[in-house]
Length: 175
Image (tube, rainbow, N blue to C red; front, side, top):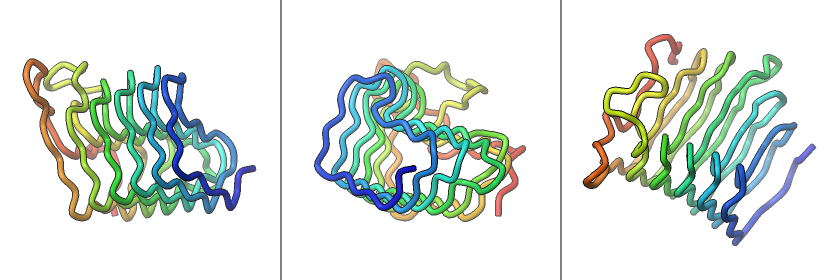
């Protein structure tokens, strides 16, 4: 159980998943945490328990071999709620900046003044699983997904440009 914790001014480099959340964790603050060069994901959320009320402020998720942030939400008791990403950077991740998937949905995720650039470089144009996008959502439902004042920038040569800034799968129920 990881409740009421604060992480500040941390640099995490070259781990399998730089941050891995697998059990219950609520009311956690992350400030100026840099996740670089993960061998898989910068932040991996395995939603098999209540993971809610996390606030990421001035964080960077970059240069991961797969995703900057990957959330696989399968906890039927309660969804991943109220995840706030404020002034965060998702950059140069080989697959996606953010991917949210799973058998249940999520609610109240906000991205405010975030920057997305040069993600999905290893995916072919028009890929379907996952879509070549900075943000790809294909969970069962998404309630209260909000983007405010964010910048989405494509890839530079020789990478193929990202097909979408934000892609929400048509099978996802959106409210």
